[in-house]
Length: 145
Image 1 (cartoon, rainbow, N blue to C red):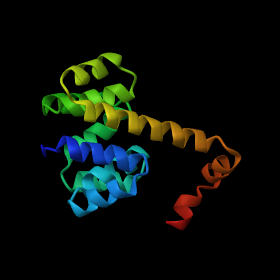
Image 2: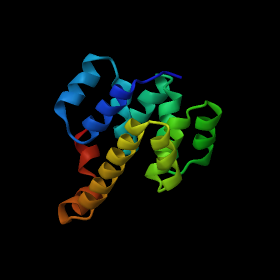
Image 3: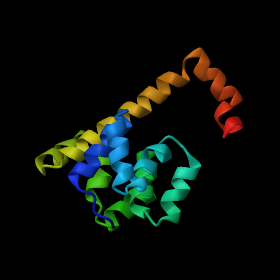
């Protein structure tokens, strides 16, 4: 399992929130797999394949745990990726996971969970607008990829 510094996790959270300098930092410091996480969470099959092909199994399991995959959660626990498991649990509404990470001084994972949750909500809100509904119906993204 690859170790990511608190700063790298913070940069991922900042990138998710639209910070261009965080995006640039992740690119220039060799963290394409972290950037793939948010795309995979947003159901980008190529990003998820990138995680699997690159053997970033903890990150792939993190993505699947966000979407309530119990086997993925078990994999995170067996891999001792407790911070990633707790981060996914916060996204899934587990207040105890947030308290545990905060008491362990892992505020960067709490920030990451909140950034991902915000993006999920933002994407959901966008999908309920008239334009968002049309995009979903006609799936413009796939037609232009």
